[in-house]
Image 1 (cartoon, rainbow, N blue to C red):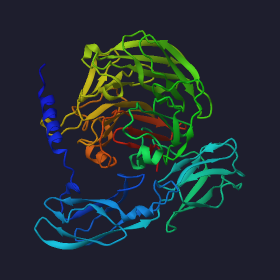
Image 2: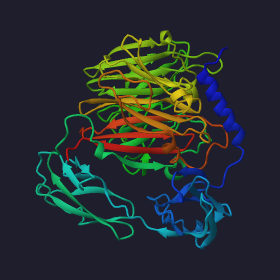
Image 3: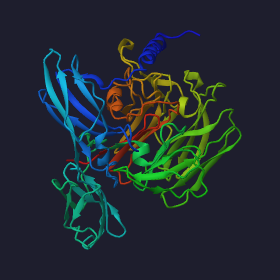
Amino acid sequence: MELSMKKIFAFIVLAAVLVTSCHEPEYVAPTASRSGITSLTAIFATGPYVDMEWGRLEITDPDETYFVIPLSYYYPSDSENKVGNYQIKVRVRASIANNCKIDPPLTILDLTEENKFTFTDAAGASREITITGKLVKSSVCRILSIEAGSPAVTGVVDEINHKVWLPTDADLSSATASVVFSAHTSISPDPSAARDYNEGVTYTITSEDGDTKVDYLVVRGTPPTIDYGYSEASMERLFNLDPATAMGLPDFGDPLNVSMGVVEGKLVVNLADGNAPRYYHQVSGAYLGTINLGAANPSGAIASDEAGNLLICNYADIGQTLNIWRTASVADAPVLLHSFTNDQDVPAGTTMKVIGDIDDEAVITIVYDGIAEVTTSSRFRAVHISGGAVVSDEVLDLAGTGLAWGAGANNGTCIVSGSPDLSGGWYGAAYDENALYWFKKDLTVGSRLNGMGPDNELMYLNGNVDANNLDSKRFNNARYMVLFASSHFPSWWPGPQIYVYDISSGAIAGTNVWDSSALVFSIDNNNMYSLQNEKGATKESTASGDVILSPSPDGYKLYMYYYDHYAQMLGGFCVDCLKR
């Protein structure tokens, strides 16, 4: 079998990583162009959170000599776990400029003490530096969500202007409210008392450390919006958590197929392990419970549509029945939406996606997996819903395009529809394919974005990542598609990557995944890599992941969540379409 130059280059880089991966440096490789220390990171060295980042100090003064790393008083931050007793044994890493060094090398430090080192800059000049730590309480104080009135109206939070809109015509002149706010903070006045939201109520959130206060005006009214898409100014990171230590999910060593959905403003996570999916607060990531599974079988994947409906499917081997259940609440048992017999020669159900509203018009896609060491696959199933009913259900084959994929979460793929009416074509990418495709409605290749860097000097999508996590949704007159390349080998470069495209015109014009004219948001491999935890990949596991887009049912906000099981990263972003 002949290898392309791209494959040969990827192999050479991979081999180089293998040769050097046996030695782990005590500090992060030089990352800054200016002279000095740019950041210090404290990592738990003992206890249940070992290898997790505890605190980080960003350093702007290149001549600073005394460094105090802030350490969270609680860990995870929304828990009641006081972790000060771990301060005497903390692993510390430094990010420093080229040709600089710290002597002796940083290892395990007692951050209750002042630790002395010699820092030598690129010019050879040396000075004594001191590194210590301090337990700090959080200064974060914000309203995460609010409901007011009966029946409850969900507020639209404008975090930039600290204003909350209650979009309803109902009388809220004497209404009570339920407010979710940052952990360990306080709110005043008491929202459980009846107040006049027609005129507006101001709530004050006071931070955990008591030094920060933020006033939010909560008022009945319809927020003004922009005409198209989302406001770039509204982009905010919601959370980036370790699934095991912060969210109670399995560690990376467990072979799992992970998937996500959103229902009732809650992020639902499915592990396809026979247990009921767990759900979390969609803004904070705080654990809330497990869904009522009823008779549904979540051995396959879950997904969610644009109207707040959660879909659940089972894994169907050859000849078995694949069922798709639906629910609009974590408390209500799912009911059967659609079934079909898997009459193909490969299994299905590992991946499921949906665009549109299943009570109106939507397209559900389910991928047929390859079989390990037996065969690849190029097929997927498209279920078209119109008027709230299934109007077509067909198997589509991309073999004519040359795209094929392997088995399951590790080597499979994800195919998403470009529109709820089948007119937008299909988007797909597969592990080791190194490209993102747009297929026209007739299944011919409409456009292809390369995944490698110029002259193969930069690696974006390659055999070290799984470029097979996609989702598509409509939001404020636009259509978006997201590609999340999760880690196939988390301890090797490159790290995970996120690319969001405006697909309103169908085609994803351009040459590369990172500079397409359709690209509206991205996080490159270096920045995502810095967010994953310190566990790396010390043993074989399943390189599974997922990414979802979730418009709020009221149409004002668009959420995006990513889950990299192998790299142990689960996080989210949020944007809105408010006019400011």
